[in-house]
Image (cartoon, rainbow, N blue to C red; front, side, top):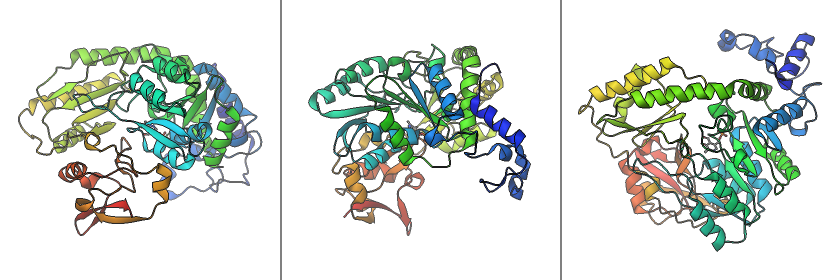
Length: 472
Ligand SMILES: Cc1ncc(COP(=O)(O)O)c(C=O)c1O
């Protein structure tokens, strides 16, 4: 490794120099390990350190963490990068708190991750919603710049815009046009690039927000890069963002005990990417391309075709036309495959720098079995119906107002005309089917009842009946 990895080196040095630990965490560097975890080995405990002399402090950094962040900013070509150990969630919250004040308007997509709605509660901002559109596969489309321009023109007092790019399935919008549109109003564009931390390192991917000049770009490094779960970063650039305010907001929401294991994995990942990602992603691209050429389309499924400008090639989406969810689940299990997401009739398979030709062989074998099962195991549910598509999209209360409103539980079957008070979601993707503050319609209730209410978080079950929390 020719690159500096300041956090990793500092932890290594600390471990070598310290034989007797008289500080947190309470496992004293692995001197005591609970029995159930002994098989994980000792080293992980030893490296799980805290902010002692020489190891810097994430919330007030001047040493190795600051250096690692600067190296990361350089690798992505931005002015500043801030490490996060609480996922993109912490970055999204910090970004929204840093750009809008209570009562100010913010343009956000209805089909956003729940962390965005939560940030609206925290900030007290007033959302202007961009409603989603779906394609023929039942997948949400990427943002539409024309819609953004229309909303900005109709609401010239919008203080910031948040866009998710890409969608969970890898769809990408025209981020350069979005940056230009938003900057023409002299306001910041925050990009939730949770699923696109790898884009900057290979030109076969769609354009990343960092390369398009977006002001704040939040990436769940842990989702697509070799980083421990929870490790993420927020990149900032340009003159619109008040960096001190961003830092102040991150201190407001971040734990005072950030994990050094996560920070070390971010530090090491950046070095790994700079050295190996360009060649690694080209290799991956070739494998994915071969898969697309090789895999036969079948009456049972369609593999969404490659589209390098508007779709991340590393996400393989397969749309199943008739097989039941149960058959798909059992068959993936049979091949030892775990997919990233199942939603409607679509399975999403995520490839990474770690995916190899054997993985592709398994995926192809699984698909071949699905083809052979043609006409059997037919689905009887109406699972493919998109819940969001029947959502009224009618917002009655602002997120903070509904959050603090008195609530009551009512039978789902009798909730038409009431205002939802709790998110109802499927995870992943963590995008609420019903957002608090939204009007509940009969169409929505029918859709939920006919599908899989039991798998939805946010509904309560009493005496085999579903209940939903609504505003009193
Ligand atoms: C689009 C999107 N944004 C933000 C998040 C939150 O990311 P994290 O889990 O890193 O906090 C997720 C998580 O799934 C997501 O899908």
